[in-house]
Image (cartoon, rainbow, N blue to C red; front, top):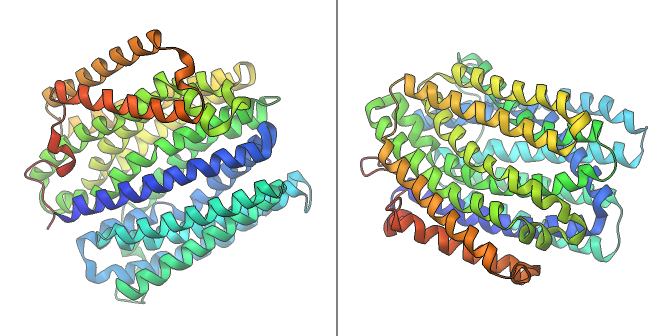
Length: 481
């Protein structure tokens, strides 16, 4: 089994076990806080994540790219990146303090904002050292630490629910688990792989010519996935934020799969971009095709069974989120596509171009949020996201094609045919079968198994995938060295 397949399977198992546990955390937290308090918690979390985007600025991606090219210099690059991130963390905490003052000095929401920002500082530290695991293609360590952290978080949230704790309790819980996860990640990387060391790599070499574009790309990605909740918090009234947050959190869970795929292939992608650009063509073709295959299931599940998903995870009080989840399902396909085409641009040392297209997409989303949310609420928010993400996907695909990276149409059309066949079967089943079959936890599991079975069968029938598809993430020619 090659290193990339091991990476993918480790991440897939680890992230999806963590996803299942994380779904339980979301379920418990939403029920413990109620619609409005849950909306406040998620809005503060989104703001903290947006500020925390300034902690990374694409530096982890630089570590992976440079480390994959020369593992002997990983420790020196890591030292440089930690210096930069330490300075950025101090600056971010000052800015967050000033932002949180709008909630009132030492008010619960002020303290919650600081706690969740500290949580994101710890998460970013974990992310940096996690980059070392990716360079050495040993993501099984990351998977174990991630699952352990999620289990600890679930235990603490359950205890809070039973004890009827306030919203601030959950801020402390998130921060404590993030800090413990960061310390565990640092310990393992230092003992097994690489330690930060002052080396012969100047800071300007680590950052490189494309450092600014990595930074902007990181900020744009975070803005594009957080501005929606913040816009609703500013301009929508009543429980709208909590209702929308339920659908948005489900979409964040679904985004784990494209992130897992990206993390698994980045070292090989960057190696091919540096040393074998002809091999990169077949690699990209397989990467995009398999990305769309993986997108089929979450897209179809959210499209046809949004009530089963929302009802089981959040409860009846959040069922108004189901129609919005159905619309947001398209984002799964779009984000898989953006990552596949965009990562090829990065591998070709054209991060600057990828950043421009990301700016176009996020700029469009932000503009539409300002124009539509005050009058349209959730409807305007969803429309803004879909337009911006579609534009970003098209621009990245066109840029890759212009450079000569055009995946064969046949495999992609077979995936489209398989998805269409599965959608037709599911649509017919939803019309014929009684709705109460898909209610409650039993309905959630039934919809999960039914959608998965139909999707796999349709992909096999249209030859979009083969039985041994899980046995190879890459085209036959794509092997990790």
